[in-house]
Length: 428
Image 1 (cartoon, rainbow, N blue to C red):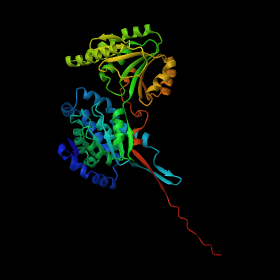
Image 2 (image 1 turned 45 degrees about the horizontal axis):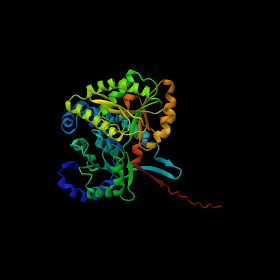
Image 3 (image 1 turned 60 degrees about the vertical axis):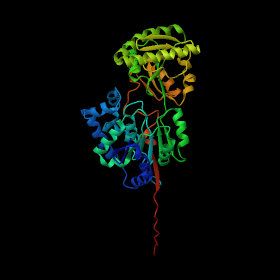
Image 4 (image 1 turned 30 degrees about the horizontal axis):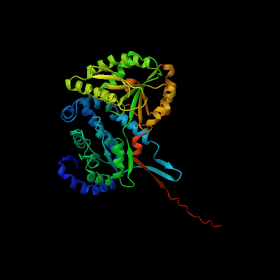
């Protein structure tokens, strides 16, 4: 399906829509700019409908299970106060008088969003950031989007018709390179949330001059130094199970500030029943439990064939696998987590192997060690350091992978003011 002109259209309208899109983009960008206040009003109205439950039917119809919880997680970021603070923090000071004249903020123009599908509402969220910066937004829907983004766009344009020419969505398969090339040719900036393969493919499609804005896949982990409290372990287990390892901020590996094997084995034995309790709470159907168990067994069998020497601690619908290496890698997902030893003096060379891909570290340590470990993690390239249960929480005014997104979606125009000097003739 397609969203264009405030309507949901069939895929058969793709060629006609794309055929007129360059002209429509030029027309809208040539008119009065989209005011941030207009966008704020519309997002605020949408948020109030979400809070009141008016959108629950829509979410139940188009979104996957637990979508409401995921939307509630990002809801604070979409409050009017939070968005106003973001605009001030990220764009404040970029415009204004200069010694040569003045500087003005302008949108890049048209943003093509290669939207992610690992969390409900993210395609609409990335488009909202484009709206706040005055851009026309062309959204390529992710494979798993069953209509939620289209419904949100329709609701948003009903609440504020002035947003209609700034929102488009296309359900184009990633293999349809011809259509994707037509979309990239229209874009001043291309926002991609994909992995290395997707980014590489997009670079080949993007025309010269288009700004490529990468929010690629990231890896996150927990770091545990000395004995962890029961509350910290419970919070970490809840995080691992509730996110399924599917988010960039999900814990993939639990690193222990240890050199010997015995403390690592003891940790795995202590953590397994905590992880089981979390799995029992979140995996409420036989299918969910079976999926978690299958992912864990598949990983262990692969490691056995390769002879990597892992030690598996299997629980009900979850597992903890103690690995002899130190590499940061994806876990088996769905309640199955890896544990590795990484003493703090070896942290930087190990983590820097994944430079550019590091995101969140959930830190568990004594307060006396916190400043030292925070410094090491930051120098290693981590962009977020949180409590173990907050690794996937969204914090107002936080950066995105170490950068402020709104700044990447605008350009600064410097304008020189012509100095007019009048010559005066002095008569004596």
